[in-house]
Image 1 (cartoon, rainbow, N blue to C red):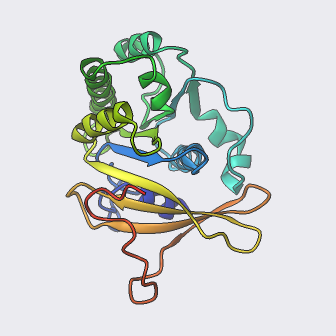
Image 2: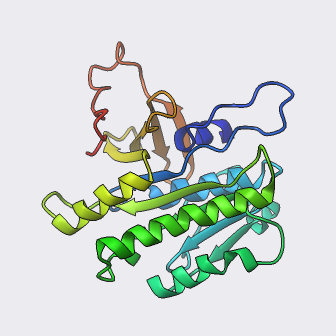
Amino acid sequence: MAEKLRRVLSPGKAAGPGEKNAAEVGPPLLLLGGPGSGKTALLFAVALEAAGDGRGPVLFLTRRPLQSLPCRTPAALDPLRLQKIRFQYPPSTHELLQFLCSAHETPGPVPSLLLLDGLEEYLAEDLGPQEAAYLAALLLDTAAHFGHRVGPGQGCGLIVALQTQEEGDSGDALHLSLLQRYFPAQCWLQFDTPGAGQCCRRACLEPGGQGPRAEWLMAFQPDGEMTVTPWPTQADDPNSNKCSSSGGQP
């Protein structure tokens, strides 16, 4: 499960036998999808897996506390993993920027993964292109700073989740176009035909030139358990090219 999640959200190259890390840190990634597409659940699952790989803690930024665990996996029941996830809840863009600017002063172990859920809620505060670009650049700088502190060959990953809106929203399109300049690697989550008793999503990874394009099937059981499996090959599934290489937007 851990390796599958890393392959969905990290285009980095897997480490070979005897190498220090389970996988190299991939490029910063933008996680995209509509309301209820499973972005928070996938971020939280990745946080749990990263918290159990023997590296530093995970920093999880979101505007409001999670009301319940968004996915049910064996890792979600491991108190040691949960303790390694540091939740921070900046209530406004101003406080988010303040937190990121002071991140280098944060005491304790250095995070090995930085996650931001609900970027659209901060962008909704009438941020213009210049302010949105500054926020994106600051996120990248913060992850780079953490990576420098962690040490050579390790680094700090960065994944930012953004809710996409309906077509025709010019403000959303402008923000997305701008963010794609800072996050060339993107993963789109799309609703898919559910199986028996399942809620299914299709994860389409566009690595931005950092590796091959990949697609995965995320299935959520009624009890919240999540599984991740490779999407059928094009030979098996005539609709496997649904996610276009030009961006994969549903």
